[in-house]
Amino acid sequence: MPCEFRMTHRVRFADTDMAGIVHFANFFRYMEDTEHAFFRSLGCSVHMEVEGRKIGWPRVRTVCDFKAPLRFEEEVEVQLLVREKKARSLAYEFVCRKVGSEPPVEVARGAFTVVCVALDEAAGRMRAVPIPAIIADQIEVAPEPAGSEG
Amino acid sequence: MPCEFRMTHRVRFADTDMAGIVHFANFFRYMEDTEHAFFRSLGCSVHMEVEGRKIGWPRVRTVCDFKAPLRFEEEVEVQLLVREKKARSLAYEFVCRKVGSEPPVEVARGAFTVVCVALDEAAGRMRAVPIPAIIADQIEVAPEPAGSEG
Amino acid sequence: MPCEFRMTHRVRFADTDMAGIVHFANFFRYMEDTEHAFFRSLGCSVHMEVEGRKIGWPRVRTVCDFKAPLRFEEEVEVQLLVREKKARSLAYEFVCRKVGSEPPVEVARGAFTVVCVALDEAAGRMRAVPIPAIIADQIEVAPEPAGSEG
Amino acid sequence: MPCEFRMTHRVRFADTDMAGIVHFANFFRYMEDTEHAFFRSLGCSVHMEVEGRKIGWPRVRTVCDFKAPLRFEEEVEVQLLVREKKARSLAYEFVCRKVGSEPPVEVARGAFTVVCVALDEAAGRMRAVPIPAIIADQIEVAPEPAGSEG
Image (cartoon, rainbow over all chains, first blue to last red; front, side, top):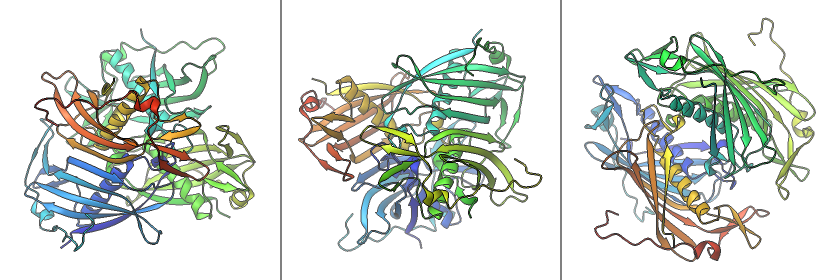
């Protein structure tokens, strides 16, 4: 049962800033895009209808440690690890490594805590709900490696 | 009756790219933000309900000519000019001048054509509708200056 | 000799806005990313050193016509066509079609005029220079199709 | 001696996503923009030359807890608090409160750790350096409030 997922992103020109490197906030986008591709790999979407309700995944907490710069046209592999699975929330860790460097350089490491909500569009509100089985039953928590760097 | 509006923007770090200047796509954001402030100055919003319908303003055409670079922490005044008012659409011109340069340096000049739509959220569709009177009655086309640079 | 290039982009969550569709300014990013991948396909980069000079490609004019909305997780194929090749500038046309719709839906059509510059970083300036042969010799203008839609 | 700074931001249309609220990564931009305005309030810039060296402030760690949604055209006041001042780094806390709600609603709370570097552009590298006195001498750590929520 999937507990991790990997996706490679190539740094776009618009991702850089005047310091010549990827603007830090864009790392959160690489992580989010990886999360969404993970859901697609399960035949799901972060934005789907389940039993007539629109489901969404607002972020409760996001964090990133930046370790090395990343530049235009470089490629970064983002590894998503499921770190926690609760009734209404998930926690991910993201390890970002520059592609093609040997040994691989870890450029950033982040984490998201996300909560599953049902969107009540008429009321313009959302409330936490149990993660639908079609998603929850396909995901498990990643084993902690012995001698983990996390 | 208003036919123009001015708004000053300070260049944010995240607006720049590795060339050390504002990434061109962000000029479209400065223009759009100016358009939205123009609507607020009329007591309206680009995202409002009129007679029970949600109104929106998708872009049909946007264009920008780039004339000089703009850098971090510089200020740019965007002048919006109403160039056309039809039953269901508006056309704006935007003149972007660097603040504090004497004579003022025109850094970019753009144009938007936008159409007024009603959003049918249930169907996930939108269709062109006449501009609500509460907006249309407050706006007029700007006079062309003699010896216009446009 | 290459006169066109195609690249497919999947709409990211962060590309959308509260109208539920891709924010118009992001189409310019899809086009730019396609241009940069076109350069990579030639073994070059838009940000490269040629004979000791750093070359860049500022935009002089960008335009886009928006024809149909594009939504989260949809895929768009951007076709770049070289429309003009001058000593110091290039002009591209971009045709954006939604992937998987039959017949293909054209969602947007745009154009860039870009100029080749040498960056003088010490002076913080750039000036137009002839397109390096390593690039110019690999590109030709696309033939206009009979009965062109352009 | 300044230990805090406040800046109000109005949510731009392009800051929202298809969930109808501010995309979470944009909170990091509001925080960064507040940091940069704080530096300007001291007569400095995050991107300045000190004694012939270009100084920069890469992020080492950024974190944000999201507490309530923020929507288009709402205003958010970001309060920056200096939480740590070391020889070569600073740590900030950011408290984001929706303007005009009574009592004020805290929509997000974040933190940055940033390091002062000198940019060696020829080598394309940066290395940590002591914070220049012109900046360090103007900043002090904010007192922890009794009964602090931080």
